[in-house]
Image (cartoon, rainbow, N blue to C red; front, side, top):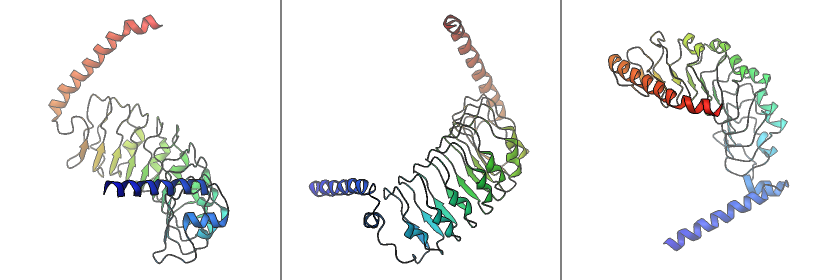
Length: 287
């Protein structure tokens, strides 16, 4: 049995290697090997071409003008053809785990697009044309190269869910409060040194995730009547955010009473001050 499994794994690895080589050959015959024969519209109006080692999108996939969902995740794509904009009924487009540095212009011309996955690429900015996606309600931008919050996102008036975790963002723009439909924002793994003030004005938010940032102090969130979940773990904080009844907290002191939290917070602050005192002479020496 072990020998059979070993042979199976070897064959699969050989197949993947062959796909990788063929992906560099632009002929139609080679493309058919990677994606199959695209002749008929899928009955569920969903086309999944994920994990095919594609370096270009076959034009045959752009003729299905009734297509609703297109999955292109986990390929080697860095561009998309202009013909993509012919998919006027497309509602979901998954481009995560690819090699994009620039957002293809055709995406901004998909009038019914409501869900867009762009995570795990190489984006560091987004074009102003993204604001044309008036139906966009869910946007995934996690694990890219953003050092500044892409302000065009603040123009997506129908946006309800925003994933921007694991970038290098240090602050959020005040214009974010324009997104009155936004209900959940995921910002884990960034470089936030303080709880973003603009979020305090967004009383309609239900989920706030600021896990794995650099926030030392959390303001009270009791006034945010729509809040249901706040995730603040893995921050060097000296307190937990005060929240209203029924709101779930995930992080240090999440289950503590206010008195216990105050005692622990004072102790943590004292430890931090002591550490700073201990390293001060060394810092002066290095200077």
